[in-house]
Length: 109
Image (cartoon, rainbow, N blue to C red; front, side, top):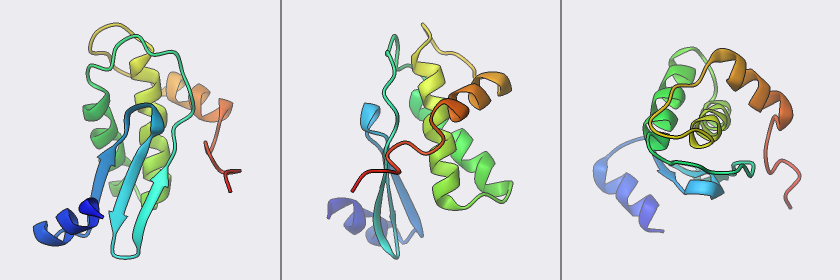
C-alpha cells in the first residue's frame, strides 16, 4: 500500500494515517492495522488531528501499546469533534467516551 511505502521511504517504525469518522490506520513493520472510531455526531473537525497525535504520543510515552494508544487517541478525537471550534478534552470526557465504547470495531470480522 502507499502508506506502507511511505513508512519505508521515510525510514520510520510507524506511520499513523487518520481517516476521519473511520478512525485511523497504523502502518508498521508487521503490516497495516485499522483502528476504527465509534460513530459520533460531528460539529467541527478543527483540531482533531492534533488531538490524535498528542493523545497517541502521551499514551505511548506512558507505556501503552500502539493499539491501546490508537484507541485512546480515537476516543479523544471523538470528544473534540463534538464541540465547536478548536477544543480540549477533559479527563472526565475521555473516560466517559471510553466507557461508552471501549474498543470500537472489536467485534468486526
